[in-house]
Length: 145
Image (cartoon, rainbow, N blue to C red; front, side, top):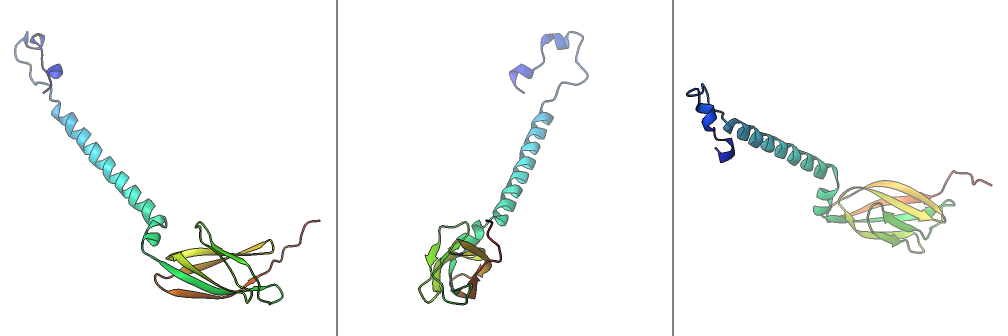
């Protein structure tokens, strides 16, 4: 018991008090609260990591290949990128592209050509090359005059 919490002589003026103050229960509750809060914090951190793409990025990367065609069905030179990464490449004059180092898991592939960007959901596989096939870069939007 700390000195500040020890009983004084005034507490014993009438004889022995029926029960001396016990501060150990407060310490036990504080320790229990710290343990419970630590477990909750650990659970929240684990939940955040599993919902983020950290585990996918740690687990490896793959390669994505494909073919880009314009609205007329002709091969197009376009910029291809993976959203939320720094991965960018450009298709060759025949419309083919290869994008290595794509983080494993679900990704959003963006194909940009002449001011039009089209998003394609893809799944990259660790250590493998995934061919996403033919992608058309066309829009149905009518320009505003």
